[in-house]
Length: 408
Image (cartoon, rainbow, N blue to C red; front, side, top):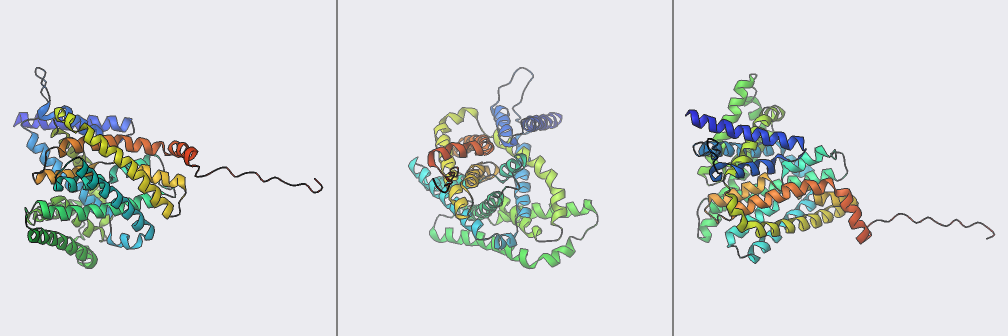
């Protein structure tokens, strides 16, 4: 037991070191934690008394990582509101549809071209289609672009992408986790999953008056116990219906977002989201054998290049259709290409269903590439625009009109 606690403590120290380094470099914490997990864990070499394999504590760390997924999705649900979609406007719906459709179709084509089976292809299409809300939000804040004219559309596209993620995970968990093989069985599983999600949407619309009274608890200690108990119960119950536990967490967050206690819940949840979320990325790295990455390098590179191109094009189209300038549209395309937590969650769904193990190294490399390249391109969006403007001549300096002098 003493050695087990020491292993967990050592893992947390490594997570803390990764967080400090990322903060010093003003960069996303995600790639640092994944790389740290890859360098240690079950596949790490031992040097005398220095042993970072975390064999005894691996199950505990993985469980803490699962809790991290629940908090990430629960918080996302708190940020989302059924009313937001109605009020978001035509531009966000059009922009989000273009973004999701282009990425998903390219993901399907890519999976088929590289010879993946159908289910693996759909999972690849899904993980190629979901941006990282955490990285995008952090980049916008760090670069002080929250007041930019394109930021509203960027956040709208992210919101639309999150809705797609919920629908995708709900549908695919019904298909994969229920183990249905017949057409009727698949349709039944999907209907159960979608019906389960719709039930939460209905509760979110008609249940707040009751929930407001139920959650009217003065003590923060009791309040957080009630919230966390609800979160873990709903997540666990969701799995019994073959709906991913993460989706159960998201749906519960969506319900609570409609209550008058939303801000209080968010304030209490954020520290847990950050702590357990960091362990989630570290635990994902622990599952990756660095030696296995070689077989997925070209697969991940191809997917990353496609994502960069398609995200840029879809961002340009969305921005221009919304009446934004080419410069603002360039910023949209570069900002939304970062991939992170949600791509990993989609891949984990496929792995939980027993799909090809190549999904692990592929997703790790894919996320690492875009978690690094995405923020860098966003930071240099002005220079990227200037370079492209020289080629496409989107905007030119206005020509000076010649003033004619009478008598000339």
